[in-house]
Length: 281
Image (tube, rainbow, N blue to C red; front, side, top):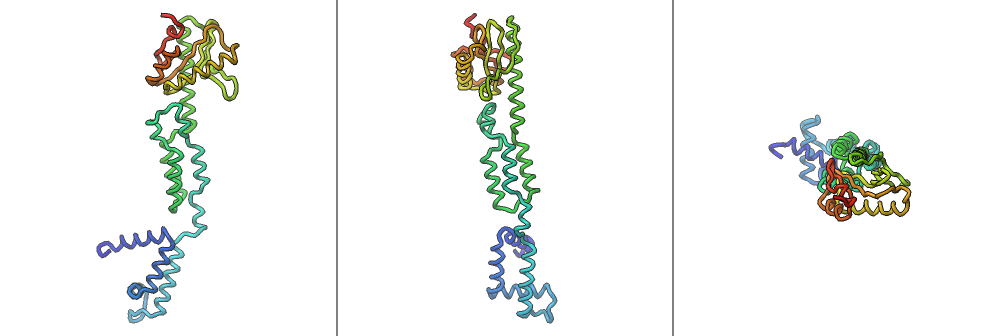
């Protein structure tokens, strides 16, 4: 305090800004404690014009009133607080965020660690509610957060790109073997569709496309294809070929695809070939 009086002064003012009760406690200290009251009188006497450099009771009363007025001017009112970030601001951010469920279709647990979650947002909200955060400061924090987030639009863009690549690759590989068809999306209703559907007459390739796949992804795809075969046999011509296209195939996906006879294509190579699925060498 003796070496850096301005530092103590700023620390003191910050304490007043954080909690109005601090001001009440300090005011009571300055007006009731003999030593503090004397020190206050000396400070006031040094800062305002008092005859003979002596503070009277009236001088101290005036100084206290001046301190109250200064306090009222310094501290924020309810009207002032209206400019700060609200729950609606938080809600708008939540609407833009991609959830963990959105990310699971193409990201691993390690990948997910870099994205902001609703839990992170709640922590930010609790932090903001305990402080005076202006909209400008809040927007700056949100901007930094948004720079690290994957939006739903970005996720959909990546997913669509993978599906397009899967359809193109399946169509190309079939045509190389003499099977002519146009690969497309098969949509049966609002909740039931396949990313890849290519009916070449003598065989029909049906399946899914994902950025990253594991054994369970392969199993679920086969289960859905078997449902299609039972419910809509008119969509299947010739030999049914289950197909799964992915950019990254986990070892479990490769193992299950071989066991279940699923045509597994990783990027530009066949991990499980069409001939293996058809039972040919």
